[in-house]
Image (cartoon, rainbow, N blue to C red; front, side, top):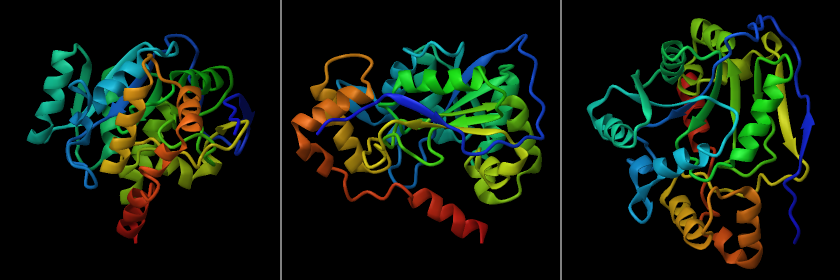
Length: 274
């Protein structure tokens, strides 16, 4: 079976009431959301993948190959359990920010404010095999057009674990000021999805729908798959095409986490909203 990772672009929504910041003094930063208190796999961000290197190490390492941003910040919480994440950042000379444990939207807003970011790449820490080429492509799309928010999963056509979100500071601030629902505060960009007529939104779409593949880490089965991938692909960064080639040669690998429901978190948030 042949797979393609060529990119095509598709506009999904295009409305706006958010002003576009001037191009001058643009600072693009990547905020990686991380905490120890995951309900589905507690402590997953610091769980070992191979050779003593945790999930968070691989997230940061993959992002180092991006050419599209200037600052990388780990946004964790003020809870004592997340002191371990702060220590990891200190040991590895990585910027960090500590904020609210429940209002993740506010944590991102305050982090972006502190580090003077005009454009924010949002990256959860459960994507140790994110593709830096896809990140750069989404950021390039944002930079060369007048959009408030650009992603690649509305709808998804990339593998789970390679999602990217890019949002302007102005749009993040507007979301922070107006968000009411628990899901809008927990999922950072949920307010934008719920008010699409108020923002210029663009979706980057892959030339082939690969959304049936999954290497995000939500459950222990996901981590087992990532371990298998990393132990077999001896290069850095690891790209989508590398993993697809591996799956073509060893198709049984995709069975490792086949039963994991990647929508558990969204279902929980919808229940809280009600």
